[in-house]
Length: 170
Image (tube, rainbow, N blue to C red; front, side, top):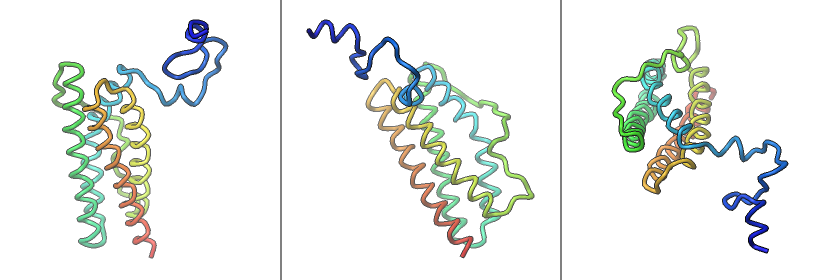
């Protein structure tokens, strides 16, 4: 009986190999290669993110808001170091400067402080989804722990941005 079960069901996820349509599980589970690519792109976004955070700090209305955003920016710099560590441990390569010119993280001069806070908030929430996928593909518990640290920081940052958005609208 066990042999029959083992033949038609994937042992790890418990659903049949055959006649299976695409499910939500397929969007969550990625390969190590896909995780490495996501990590490389995250590292490449570093310069754009730094420009965005520096401009957001300049737009902040008071010292408290500037300090909150500065703390977030500094956390993001630490995340970059962690991602570089993970990348080099998995691939054996050291990434120096990765050029990413997609411009997603740059800030337009025409946007308001509140609009930029909302953009930052949704960037953090998108990062949570990305790191959740990456964490599932990590080959060791040490690397999973490091990704979890980044993921929980992203959740903290989202909460801080919610606070700043609330403050900006009061």
